[in-house]
Length: 366
Image (cartoon, rainbow, N blue to C red; front, side, top):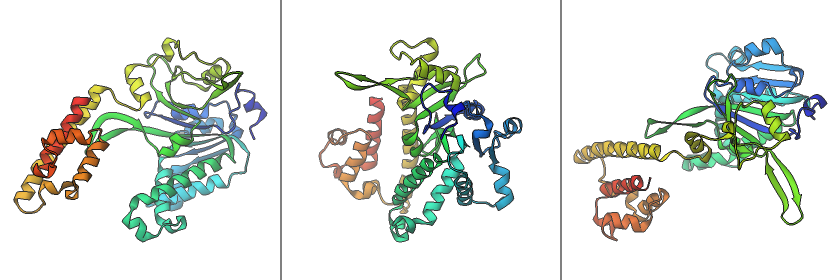
């Protein structure tokens, strides 16, 4: 249950909000999580980067765990991620229920890694045998998602609002950095969040700007004809991105049809919001992929020549349907593959060259 003081700050009830904050290092994710308006004696902070240590010496949260030295003292430098997960899970589970307005976990990535290790080590508890896991390693992801979801939902027994942070990280293609970035963290964070914000440096401001990646912060009106009508409260871009500004939007929702300058997304920000890349970046990535394919082709040809590798027509297990399916997954349909091959019987052509043609088709469509 939220304290009356905290609840009084909010035009909309924040009880049950789960917030994921991402962004580059140094942008202000920790400050954002500590400045919701909750009083320190109603805050529980689990600090996985020692980023809030200095702040806590001043504000003195009711519960504060500097997890890096605490974990090292208990498990030594060889402590594993699975032990980190179990250690922090026990700490949070040991908190009294309904004792906090805000619970912060900054940064949650090592906890995630340990949770994955825990499921792998205890897979039989989830109804999957070790032999099944060896045969189909992907079976572990169902239990991982379920356990992660149940864990986060359980944290709301301790605090009305839960905030977690992750950094952004560079995307990789074919073992090489792509030059593009995306939020780190498991998909569960995206599914469960009430609010997901990407903080960005804002020139000329101390506070960051924020891109609202996901927003369940809505008001609802009852229309006699349309029924329940949601009103989106937040704009897609908030500058400055502070909790005070967010509460202002709750009081007076943004007009998304007529955004202000501070609410207007740049082209790069639009790309982030839509989960896609600009066309020039897509083309760049696909050119990299083609270069990697060509390098691999040269190595493979040498291996075939030396009798150390099967010829390219045994790609995809020699199954034409598998090749068609792989191409279709990239957006190149069966008819286009046949057109590239120049024959309906693709077994008559060299598959390495055919697959290169499929990848070239991707660059034409970008």
